[in-house]
Image (cartoon, rainbow, N blue to C red):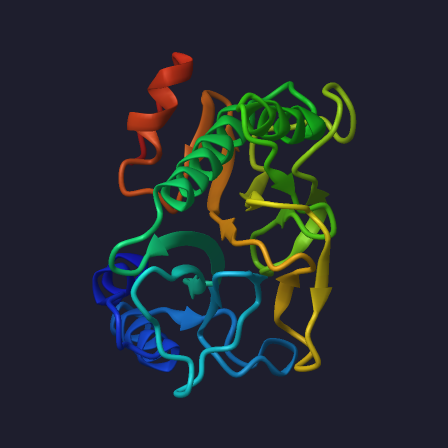
Length: 247
């Protein structure tokens, strides 16, 4: 669904248009949108534009313009199991520093996914994300009030996955654990506020934000990224990891 939505991101499209594309794709592939109706949420995806970090509500009035940055968060239920993923997409011609914001956010997410190995600790994932984000000249903001989560037969399960922290802490990762890993990164300060709609989270200083996410299953042989077409093989090879074969 996210591939379909990404292809539709152009100046002049509304976030409700994108929502309809996602819902149609999910239902056409025997899935159910996880977000629709969740605690009253009215969309099948979250569409968060520019200074909106997460949980933006798709509407007909929110029309994308050239230079915007939009994060699209999508969840679906297939055969009783939830998957959760997010991308941040440039609209038209976007400032180079914002493209870099997206790139470093994706790199940090993959560092976290690579750390989801059996025998490790939950905070190894958090530490890998933070270490990746701190390794840049620009001081990016790591949003601390929100994070990743366990996932399976419910969309949000324990444990909560921070995007920062010291390694070697928290529950031990074992085969069968599934996590949604989702760094939320700002170009400025990490502080956020929730708007009066009860959903949309924005940066307090008005800085642009990026949000990316994949779902990963911990297997005996290592991480398997269930929401990536190749299971994460291409990116995880950077850490010398081979994605387990799936029958």
